[in-house]
Length: 395
Image 1 (cartoon, rainbow, N blue to C red):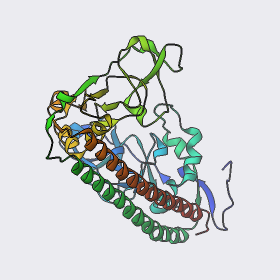
Image 2 (cartoon, rainbow, N blue to C red):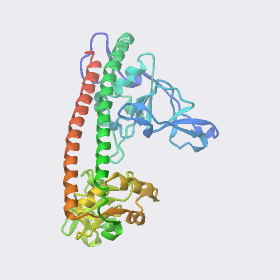
Image 3 (spheres, helix red, strand yellow):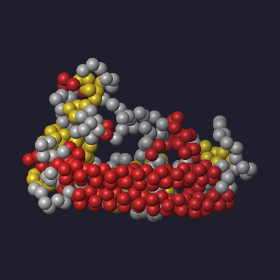
Image 4 (cartoon, rainbow, N blue to C red):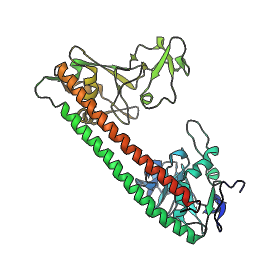
């Protein structure tokens, strides 16, 4: 071991992950075309619970090319693609002919280490720090199995490992239960918000008309990539894509002469393709692409704010999801069906009153979400601290 990052208690020693796991084999389900296999891919792992929750049953003839890694009870599976997301799990159940994606490294404990001890260790931030220098690929970061296995692991006696695992099971289970309760609180708050939002638009004392009579839905355009730029130049504007409403990680600019489809921060925008289908967005200036559609109300009878919240009410959301169509392998908004949906058109005074009430509800929901999220963050930090102490012999 070239580097020991902290001192270990007496009787402990540093080893590499490679020293405490056994070699595992690959399988080829295609050679057993009619056999039923249990396939575990990245989406099968709940990374909040570090558990396999949704394995897929497939026939060998239908197995994807990545279905090659043999797994068994008590194996630790560690996703080597985007390892920072910690798609990690301990296989706690026996499956019929299980096989995992090549996107996992299979860590099968040898006699030096307990599977649960190994599992808890590889979920730590310490391991993330050790493998970070080896992660390659900007758009699709990944690490090799070999480089993962270079990570150092502190090894006490089997008896001490048992004691540590028992303590971690008890403490972390209590914390996870608390986090689940908090998450349920958030889910309940969201359900309540949706229910109240829907009630605001159940208006019986005004006319309801098809959206197409009071709203124009204007699709975006896709300027040629030759007009793209990573820096803003004279005559260039920001190219607005669905992802830009969530992150500013990669801003693209485009020659404004290459498009006629522009939006402002106040405009009501619709994300046309999912998942999720039918995202209602606003807040950015620029030229918008084909994945977006601008909803332009007749402002003589309909305010933008009223339309913005109406399009987010569960009734129309469920309707649009129900009639979503397939486009280029994605679920997409069926514009003609959307235009037929009825919208109640009360007086502008009533519209403004509804918007004010929704605003108050949003503020309460956001405050609750912030409080609960802070509690969840604090509990996750406590988990990280407990794990850190456990593998320093301080638990």
